[in-house]
Image (cartoon, rainbow, N blue to C red; front, side, top):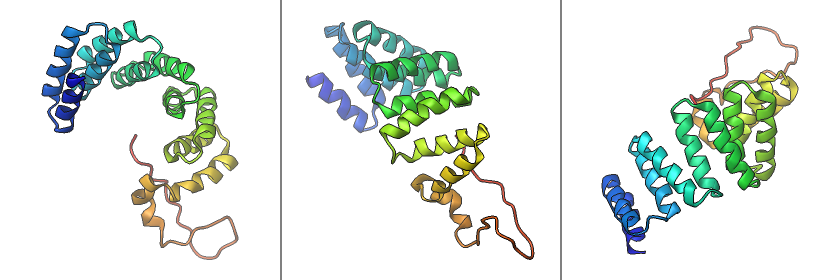
Length: 200
């Protein structure tokens, strides 16, 4: 228990190397502690030590095979390395284990959208949205998928929410004082401006 408290204090202080050393020492004393392997893997991943992180996640799954957090963390690692099929498999397992966790469903849907599997991606995003309807990042992914699928009426209607999404306000504030065209007849000039989405 003391080791658990100490590594978290070191992490909070920004001393990742110190936190890693403490968890390594704990695992010398308790080699079957799957959650400590998971925590050590996260620390390695935060330090950019991806091979070491994968080894720890694999060790964690040996002792905690039904822990969705570990599968999702391994998925994050695979996605970071560009191994998208492997990442999708991990996110899928996490979403099966915790079927009512919108975060895992959103990760899977977002990744499938990146792979061009838009219909399947929308299925997972819709489920995530039902579980967490106020989640702005899920809503943002959803309308982009709808537009890419050619479901323009629904996609553009949902895209209106982007002007209220907190994380996107800095992107869209340039439009705040500009009159918007809603398809009505007009005289003069109409400026059509490309949508400015934040980088993924």
